[in-house]
Image (cartoon, rainbow, N blue to C red; front, top):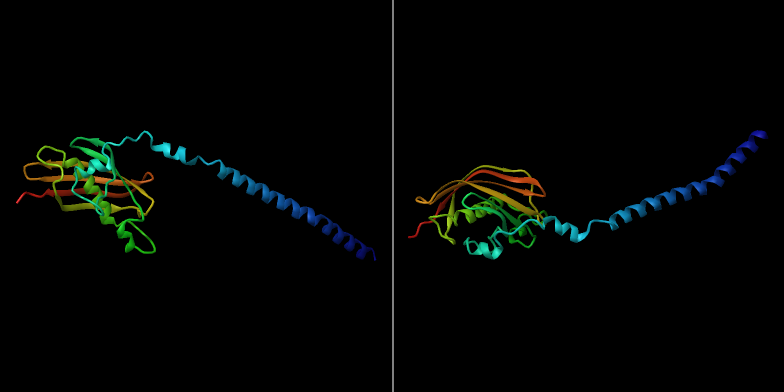
Length: 205
């Protein structure tokens, strides 16, 4: 009889405390959720994020580039130049958007900027440097002669900002031959590297 009484007492005691335990857990969850919401609400915001590039100056705008390169939509792949050293090197920016036509087929359910177009973008940036050197004229057409040592490190997708850098290794105005090296980054991480690109300027017929 004493054993039964003790068991009943234990059961009633457990049921008496169980609502309190449940309430405490619920309150803890609510407090955690509130903290998460507060953290999201105090994000840095658009103004602060936009200000991250306030010290990056535009050397050549899109309109300026159109006066140098012959490329036009949908194959104009440099939006602006932010660093430029005459005859030597440049840093340019390409904003990747899902409105670009190649994403319709590359690939429909997983859009990725084709690697060859990343290399082409680097070549166009090199062209901006070369077509302002003695012996050339803005708007001239140049062709790929060769590409060596290409490495892709990470896919480039819509929404990315491709920041590219090229350096002219050699330029022979007499023969219209140029060599350059280049690399590009997204969010500070290298996505493509080209050890050497060789170009030939088209000669007037």
